[in-house]
Image 1 (cartoon, one colour):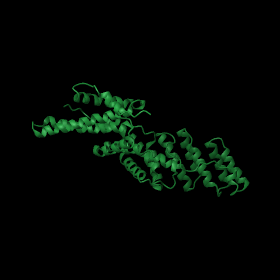
Image 2 (cartoon, helix red, strand yellow):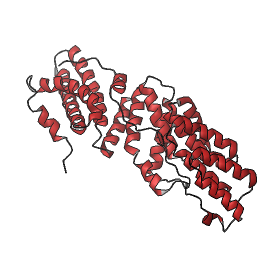
Image 3 (cartoon, helix red, strand yellow):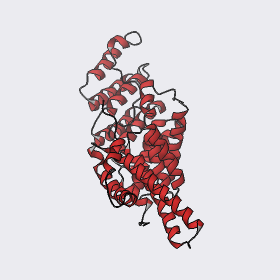
Length: 344
């Protein structure tokens, strides 16, 4: 048997986890319903209703914010202030340019100064900071939000994923807090503890992140040097989302490392029963690694985003498969095909 050099951290840098973070990644839970004169009339004067209508008809988020500023100069104690704040914050949340979104969020805080209004815009600011990859600022903003909303699964989940991305870049600054956030988000999702301020549609989207959270928490476990813990989390991720190949690939690497340790021990042992038993265990680990790698290749087949992963997994599985099949790769493709998703 042969062993090869192996680095758990190399696994993290080689296998790209698709975390899907981008502009507007955080679910907007405040109402962004368009305000109309009909809604306003039962509560306010015609003049105030017309001012609300001017906000509604303004052409973009910046103009709506400016109109809202004019509205508050005249009607600072309006019963519609919170509705206006929620509507304008929702319009800013729709802005696709992250720099513009962040600037508007900052300007919002100069117009709306009530604590509940500022909580609305903090989520929008965090979204922009995540998109701009301003990680330090995003974690500070997230901590501020979570101090007031400790059950905000969306904030915890996205910060956990960002922390994992930083760890893959060899920046371990956020590993511990990302694990804390990610594991807490998992706990709340599995207990189905929907925060009162989150609507059902947004909660369903947050629950759908569970496999990705397990996958990323497994990566952070590897960074902390705990492959046993990582293995449990990758197994959970694979069970929740069998069509995602990364969990199988990382599980394969962990089992591969277990095989290599046994192979190294086997080489240094004197002949006898213990050496034979170690050989048997090592062979079983190699076969398990082959199976996991084949599952990864089957799940990644036909998905261009996983091309790099496929290349690396093939480099790992091929020599092992040949070793177990008299130097031949006959049957390898059939093994991989067995794990391809069934076509409809």
